[in-house]
Image 1 (spheres, helix red, strand yellow):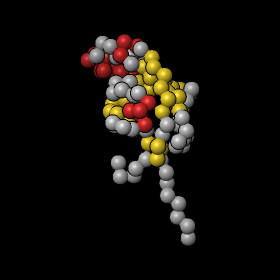
Image 2 (cartoon, one colour):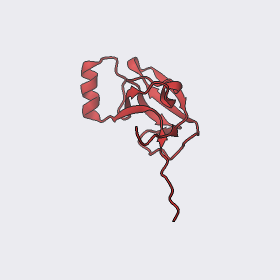
Image 3 (cartoon, helix red, strand yellow):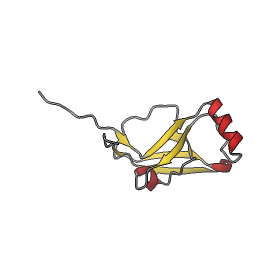
Image 4 (cartoon, one colour):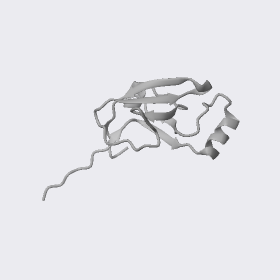
Length: 107
């Protein structure tokens, strides 16, 4: 019998899905928080990770992945460049390119 191992992409950041309540709470604490209705908040970036090398910062809000709104699911893209649009403090927008690596199942 052949066994295949599952391979998952790893970008190297921890995220939080944003909803109206979370956005309102964050805006109360941080007036520079970007004006977004949907997105994924980058809570932490692992040093040396694909996300770190691409230029992600904690506090970024991912609003687009590879030209598609973040609400659409990302397919398995290990080793393939993905263009990402993030919103930063004071509504600054940044375009980044990240290349997912194979996830370490021990992480």
